[in-house]
Length: 449
View 1 (tube, rainbow, N blue to C red):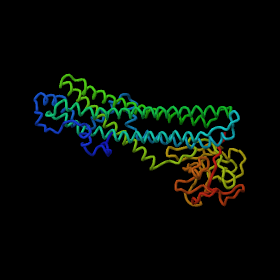
View 2: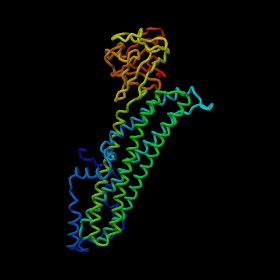
View 3: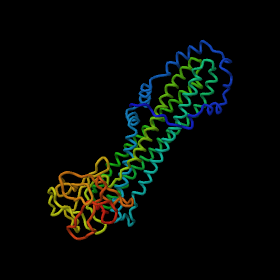
View 4: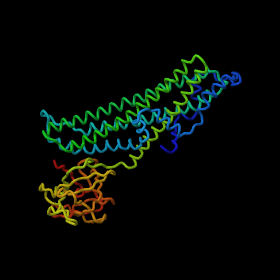
C-alpha cells in the first residue's frame, strides 16, 4: 500500500463547536482554574505522548493488521479492483441472462410460462449498488467523527490542566457516535449477506428451471454458474471486510466504555485512553481507505463501463435483422483471405462462430470449422473487407436499444459490420461501414445448443 490517503471532505470536519455544544461539558473554565499536577503530566507523558506524531505508513500497516485475518486485509488493500470486478460481474451476468430468457420462453413448467430471470437479477444488482453507495457515505461520515475525536478529544486528553472527570464526560459523546458507527457496519454486513444469499438462490433457480425445461445438460448455464460463483465469492469477501470493520469499531467502543466507566485510578484511565487513541487512528485509516477505494472503483466503472455481449462466450449463428440471412464462411474453407458472406441459414459449421471474450469486454471471433481462422478485417476503415484470417481482430458488441440479444458489431475504430445493401441473396458481401445503426448492421445472436 503506497501513497497518502486522500482526505474525504465531510460536514462533520468543519468545526469543533458541534462537539462542545452537544456535550454540555463545563469546559468554559480556563485551564489555569484546574491547576496542573505533576502526577497528571507524568501519566500523560507515559501513556499518551509516545502515540502522537507517528509515521503514517506505520499507522496504516498497523490499521490493516488490526482487521485480523488475511482475506479482509487483502480486500481492503485491493478494494478498488474488487469493486470494479463485482460491478463487471453483475453486468456480465445481466447480459447473459437476456438470451437465456429468450431461449426459455419456448418452454413451460407445469403448464405455466417460465418467469424471466433478468428482471429479478437487475433488482439484486440495484440493491447491491445501493448498499455500496450507502456504505461509502456512512464511512465518510463516520470517518468525519473519528477525525473530530482526534482533533478535539486528543488535545484535551493531553491537557494536564483538564480534570479526568471532565475528560470522561466528553468521552461519553464519542461513545454514542462509536455505537452508531458499529451499527452502520453491522447493517452493511447483514445487507451483503442477504445479497449473497439472493445470488445463490438465483443460481439454484436457473439450474432447476433449465434442467426441468431441457431434460439435458445446458452448457451455457454451466458457464453462467461459474461466473455467478465467482461473483458470490467476491461479494462474500466484501461482507467479510464489512464484518472486520464492525469488529474494529466494536473494539473502539469496548475500550471507550472501559475508559469511561471502569478505571479506579487516573493511571488506569490514561492507559485505557492510550488504547482508544491507537484503535481510533486505525479506525480512521480503515474508514477513509474504504470510502476512497469504493469511490475510485465506482468512478472507474462509470468512466469506462464496458458493453457486454454474451459475456461468457460460446457458439453462435449471426443472423442479420434486415434479411434473416447469416454470416457464412464461403465453402466452409478455413483459409487465410477466404470470403465471409451473407447466406441463407443451413445449419452447417460454416455458419457457426465462437465468441471469445477478452478482459476489456471486446471479443475475438473464430470459425467453428477449425476453431483457428478468425472473422477479421485487414483494414479498419469504411468499406473495409471482412474475411477469414489467421490474425485476429477485436470486436465490440453493442446491444441495440439496450436489448441484449441483438447487437451492432464494431471494429476498434468504430466501423460497423454491414450486410451490403440489405441484400438477402446468397454470397452477399459483408464489410465494415460507417455506423448508421439500421437493420443491415444489426445482428441477432442465436446460440448453438
